[in-house]
Amino acid sequence: MKKIILLVCLLPLSTLLHAQSSEKDLIKKTEDAAKTIDDTIPNGWKSKGKVTFLFNQANFNNWIAGGENSFSGNLGLDYKIDYKKDDYTWENRILASYGLLQTQNSSFEKKTDDQLEINSIVAKKTKSYWYYSFLVNFRTQFTKGYLYTKDVNGAEIREEHTNFMSPGYLLFGPGMYWKKNESFKINLAPLTSKFTFVDSRYTSILGYVDGSYFGVDANKSMLYQLGFNATAYYKFAIMENVTAENLLNLYSNYLKDPQNIDINYNLIIVMKINKILSANLNFQAIYDDDAFAGFQTKEVFGVGLNYNF
Image 1 (cartoon, helix red, strand yellow):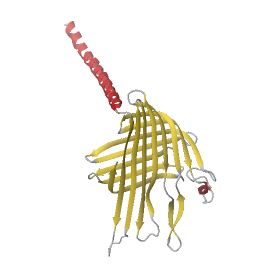
Image 2: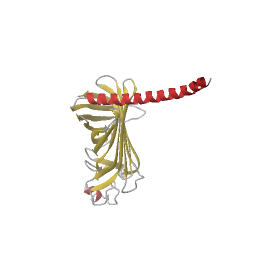
Image 3: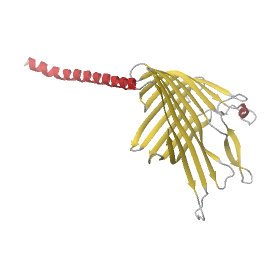
Image 4: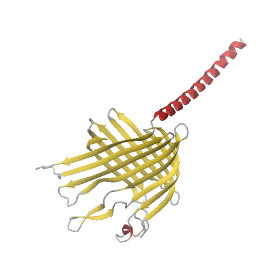
């Protein structure tokens, strides 16, 4: 009887030990499989890109309900170029877009989109999914940006507010890079330098002399910050032929108000129709109290013509 009782007591323990052993074996096999896949990727350069043209058009003729003729177009570039040499990788991505809107009753063409962003990360594999890394990020715009108002007669007027490299942002710093696969990546950089560049005429001649022009002081052209930077990338399929890309960047400045975290979030949804046609949604939300005390949001949606290369 004692042997039977002892056997009954040992059975759950044996099952538990076997389960733990199986779990460890599964983890090891998963890590080995990930390493095998990574090792089979050939050394050298690999690149791919996509050019997209989005357009919207509205036309009214004797339309009693009212309306204004308009046309808008947006040209975008998404280009990736990567390099691999054994345990070293160098990943680069260029995101660029520019769009204009023309309405019948406006004297000016207005921008619907204007951005240039370059991301580069050099990494050396350690074990499992972790890498030592060094990140570089650069952001600016292509052309002048304006604030629109009306004069005493109701005519539309505009005031120049931004331009190429006003502002321009440059971030770089060492960190740790976690990459499960090409669709899920996180980089943590605890010592990231951030430079904000502007044309000094915006902080002097044009009247932005109170230090509120993107955080740059009067008569200056640069702001330096040191802080913690975190970036994350996640791409997944919502349903067949519909994908969503999420890009998140967080930055906390150690030197001033570290609790005020800068946020830059991009959502890109592509609804593929065929090889050259798709419906695209680009949404961006920014929080940067040096630029504006609140959230800035931008949304661009339209039918797109795509060219892959």
